Image 1: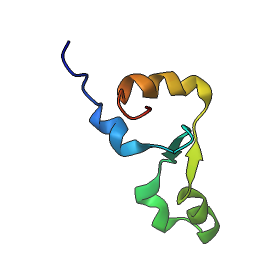
Image 2 (image 1 turned 60 degrees about the horizontal axis):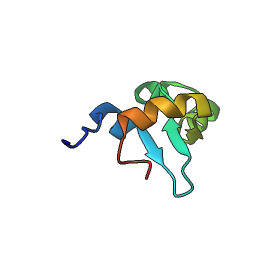
Image 3 (image 1 turned 90 degrees about the horizontal axis):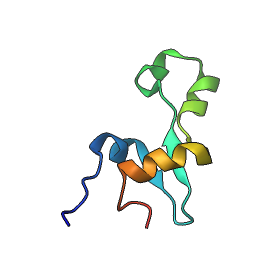
Image 4 (image 1 turned 45 degrees about the vertical axis):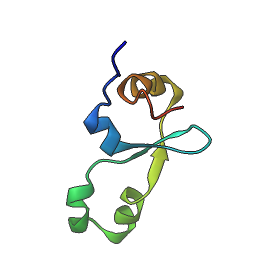
Length: 66
């Protein structure tokens, strides 16, 4: 059986924590310098993904969730 390939876009966009949670950064990162300071702080943090979206990430990152 051949190795499964990792989706390169998902590899750059998502992180898996030690407890198994999937973290993602919010979009609009490239445009945040033109926003007010209060909303810039919001876009700098990672957010947890919902459990329903986790299945799609498991397919895209076959070796990242073990």
